[in-house]
Image (cartoon, rainbow over all chains, first blue to last red; front, top):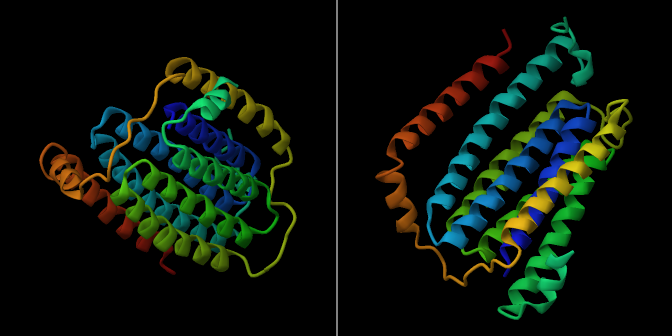
Amino acid sequence: MLAVNFLLLAAVLFCIGVYGVIARRNAVLVLMSIELILNAVNLNLIAFALLHGSVDGQVFALYVIAVAAAEVGVGLAMVLMIYRNRRSISLDELSEMKG
Amino acid sequence: MSAIVLLAADDINVAQNVAFGIIAAMMIFAALCVVTTKNVVHAALWLVLVLAGVAAQYILAAAEFVAVSQVLVYIGAVMVLFLFGIMLTRAKLGSEEGLNNPGFLLGIPVAVVLFGLLAYVSIDAFEDTTLPDRGPTPTELISDQFLSPYLVPFFALAFVLLAAAIGAIVLARKD
């Protein structure tokens, strides 16, 4: 298998995730797009772990999985709090901090 | 692209390449559905397909333990959190309007240019590099790495998870 196959697949997933973060207004959908980005990075880490024959890449991927789980927990708690205060999770309505 | 031609000419492990291609096509289609569908619950279910595809690619890349962790953590836990978040923040089921920003078309050129850059760099650097055929990674190697050289980050990660759990409880409390 070619290393560039994995890298191109990860690049496609990463760019789709970036498009989702830019295009989506719903906060939960933005969090899902962030998950796409993190998985693309993990795919690269695993591919390089295989390429170099070391398990360090797999260890990093496991760290990324754990941090992503924590991020989703806190992110969804924040979304719930925003929903309770404003009855909406549209990100473009959260403009109080705009200068 | 030269990568496609090389993929066809690469006769190291045909079955592996075919499986990779099929799973990759499924993942890309599902990912596009995640960012374009009008139904939030469907987006979560398409995301399950992407995450399962990533786990399958891990197995193809000889990373069994990470694949199992991916299934447990992402498909098992994170997706349930997402579905809870969707159900708690939105009473309406079915498709809905207004999920996209007004200027969402701006995202397309950004994503295309970014992909062009990433693809150019990857193909330029790793055009002919073949991944070696390796058997499954022994899990004890991973645990050895976790418990000796990466012990301090491991403890830090434990504190991050604890802080995230407490923070989520504090944020989501009623009062």
